[in-house]
Length: 400
Image (cartoon, rainbow, N blue to C red):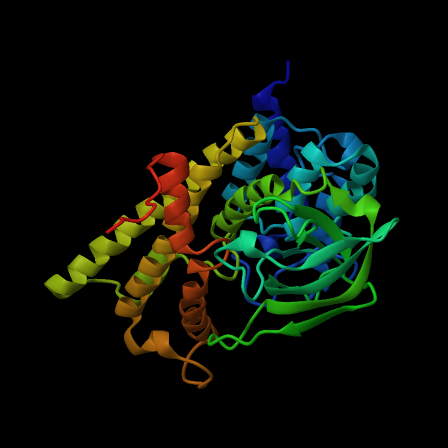
């Protein structure tokens, strides 16, 4: 039996010895490390931390050793994440393939697919993007029209995807495609793995009001995809899509949990701009900040519990919709509090009279509105909660 106390001690000692001091701070904008075929390190400590965690197999600590993981139990992984938070270690890399596609491949991929895709993923050698939403299939994802036609030894893919995060920088995409146009819309959908360097793939960035954008539109013009890249059964991709979305909502929470560039410590900022309240309204604002801070902490604890339940094989699809909706609303409330506390200092754009952090807060505030859409719009989450959690009957309309 594994001695968890000994594991915790050894983990803490290893992290203290191997995580550079320069990476024990919140991640500034521009210093986020994305795994992939071309990793951009801005200074040597980033490369060192990346390589040490990679060689420790801690990019995917709970995956089995044969697929590039460290074989840690859920309890050991919880200890590892806890110790990283205590030391304020930055994540060595961000990799959507590990967070979202990996768990689905582990459960539904063939052995050949696991060997081909999981090991490079676990070493941070491939950058993945998600091809779900389309111009006329966003909230109603099952209406997607991107087609994959059976050509014998391969599929021929035509169509487009939209709101694809970092599609222009990714190596591979996991995409939902329609393989049976005659089937009901929730059927006839399949999950394909698609090389973004294939002939016929083009990307176009989408500009947002925040001045920055990770989103792209992706176009497919007669793209050949080997049949070996089909995940699961043909025409049964909708079930896999729901699992992927469940993992996506869990992954979105990590951006706050690990204090990534989209995350700002509410209480430290409020204390900087409102060190001592001088009126009833300022006292009320401080109370709101403390309440929001406690709710955010409760949210992260709940996500940790749900992640462990998912790793144990429990179906948390409906509950993750609740968590995604809660997180979105929490971020909006947080930025409203920051704007009230900072006043005009929160409205800086490019003027030198505003600090880099103040300008980043303004952009993050504007970008927070897009989070009501990303990962499934708030309206869709409410429908999922009504159906999957509350099990309310569908409103078929009232006849007159």
